[in-house]
Amino acid sequence: MRRRTSLVTAVAATALLAGCGLTDDAPEPGVAASVDGESVQLSRVDDTVAAFCELLSTEEGAPVYARASVRSQLAWNWAQAVAVERVAGEYGVDLPSDAIDPGVVKRSWRLDDDVDDDTFDAFEWLTAIQLRLSDPLLAIGSKELLAQTGQAGNQDAALSAGTQVVDTWLAEHDVTLNPTLGTRDAKTGGFLGDDLSVAVSGAARAGSDLTRLTIEQAAALPATARCGAASAPQAQPGA
Image 1 (cartoon, rainbow, N blue to C red):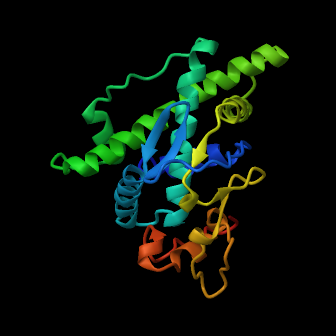
Image 2 (cartoon, rainbow, N blue to C red):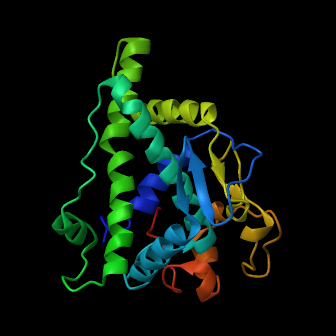
């Protein structure tokens, strides 16, 4: 279960460190995000979110998210992965192969051997993003710290430094997100906007940051707005 949910939990945590803003120019209709001549379609993001959320809903005790926040975060993570690809060479960091072993994808997400092609493609894409925002990002951060301070630092420090390198590159190359994904708050890394506003126990309002919902609030969302099961996992004593 831990490996299945690691993209949106671990990689989303990576994205929350980012402080890069977005340009005022909106991408073309149907495009979720674009940067440096590359783009990803909203349909690609939506199909992947649907597959991920369906998988998450079957896992007992799995975390629960607002679907809109997963959608926005995934588009941002894609942009970060592009940035990693662009700067890796400058730091002498190797990138994972574009060709991912199907067995690796299936084992990582515990997919059945007879998984349909669309679902497999979704998780293959998630895996490609995750592979760029894990070891390569940490290696970039470690080398940046080494150049700046003479020490590689621990994993958290390397992650923060690597993300800062990615932030800088994205800022210089005018990353854009579709307006339906909301506006990214540079201070918190969350996404704000009317399109993200939904009823959360009768308390949500336009401009609510759905990346900051508690597990209980996310679990209370309608099924179409929720990513994960309706029943929130019980908090552990002392957590």
